[in-house]
Image (tube, rainbow, N blue to C red; front, side, top):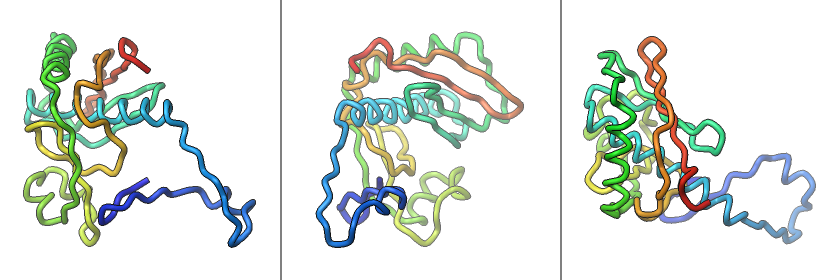
Length: 181
């Protein structure tokens, strides 16, 4: 799924269209509980990423996996931040941000604007197509085409469950187990 010029686009694998004849109406149904769960996990990943890069500005967010099994965000961590107490500190900030009911908003931008605000991400941003960015509250916006919740108050139960370092990568795992599904 993606958004362009205010329209929502759904990308469906070609194999799903092979069974459908041209000019014959088809009906698509969205699994609403699953979509909301995925949007919560995706928004949660952004919040975790924002909190960590605010606490440790030298971390560079590079990857996220926002699904039930194995939800995590990954950073380049060349400075090797101290891991002792990190889970507790991030979890405290998560609770505060959920209680603060921070808004989540998405806007379309271009390479120059995004790379000026996020030079560390410039190598990962397409140069000649519009880029959708998502921002939570006053945190820095990140390029993202995913589905999100409207506010952090919808992330009840979010918590960091594990931190793992491998060379210059830092993987932060999280769950929403304590929240509504």
